[in-house]
Length: 331
Ligand code: SAM
Ligand code: SF4
Figure 1 (cartoon, protein in one colour):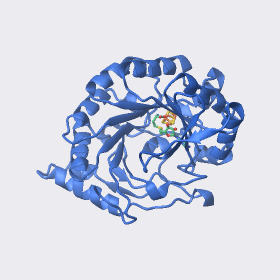
Figure 2 (tube, rainbow, N blue to C red; figure 1 turned 45 degrees about the horizontal axis):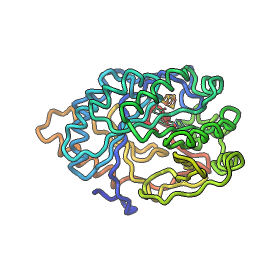
Figure 3 (cartoon, rainbow, N blue to C red; figure 1 turned 135 degrees about the vertical axis):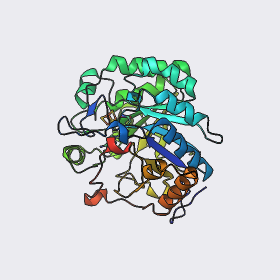
Figure 4 (cartoon, rainbow, N blue to C red; figure 1 turned 180 degrees about the vertical axis):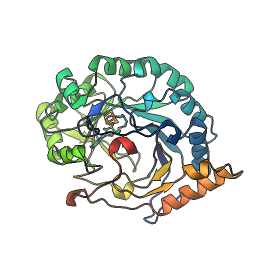
C-alpha cells in the first residue's frame, strides 16, 4: 500500500465521472456562469478502468464514484462493470443525490456496485428544494428505497448543515435512525473554489458541535461507537434505542487530515492530491499516449501523486482551493 510523506497509507481513490449535475445546491453550484467540460475531455469507461487497474496494482483497494452527479453519465453501469472486473478491486461505492436512482439502482447493483451514500439535506420538502435547488423529494426518496430494495447497503445519508436553511431539520434526519438501520451523517460546510458558493459556505457555516447539541436536546445523549476504520472521516454515534448510526463529518471544527487515506481523480483525468488544495497531476495525457505500458505509467504517476500529497488545511484562515469547486472535484 502506498504511503505518503506523512506516513499515511493511501489506498482509497474517489473517481469523479462528470462535473455536471441535475441540482444546484446553494453551497456547491451557482445558478449562473457555469462552464462544463466538453465530452472529449472526460475520461472514458476504458480509461477509468485503466486507472483502476493501475491503482490496484500499486495497492489501492477502495473506490468510490462521484461527480457532479455521477448518475448523469449514461455509461455509469459500464464504468462500474469495468471497475468490478478488475481483480483485487475492493467494494465499489457511489455518492449520489439519488434523483435518478429509482430506475438505476438495479442496473448499478447488477454491474457490481456494493453501496451508496445519498446526499439528502432535509426531509422537509420546502427546505430541501430551497437548499438543493432543482431537487424533488419524492424522486430522491424513491431512489433511496430502490437502493435499499436491491441491497446497496448500508444506506448512508449525508446532510450538509447550512444556517438559515436546514440547521433545524437535523433533528428529523437523526430521528430516521430509530426506524431504520441507516447512517445519517452531518457534514460541515467547506468553502471551495472562491466564488459565491464558497462565500455562502463561510457565512452559513454551522459547527457540528451545535448540530450535536440540537440532536441531543431532542433525543438525549449520543453514545460514541468504537471505530473499526481509523480512516473513517465520520465520528459515529448512536441514540439510545436507535437502529441506525448518527455520524458527524467535521473537517472544520475537527480536521482529520492526519488519518486521510484518499486520492482523487477528476472527471478530466487529473489526480487531485487533497480536497482542500489545488495541487494536481495530469494522468489523461499518459492514458491517451497510446504507449504499450500505459498502466505502468499511470501507476508511476499515482505513486508520485501520493508522494506529493499535502497535509493540513487552511480553512480557518479562509484559504482553500481557487481553481476548482466541490462539483469539479467530487467531495
Ligand atoms: N452529487 C453527488 C452528491 O451530492 O452526493 C456527488 C457529488 S457532491 C460534490 C459530493 C458531496 O459533496 C455531497 O454529498 C455534499 O455533501 C458535499 N458537498 C458539496 N458542497 C459542499 C460544501 N460546500 N461543503 C461541504 N460539503 C459539500
Ligand atoms: Fe450537485 Fe452534489 Fe453539488 Fe448538490 S452537492 S450541486 S447534488 S454535485
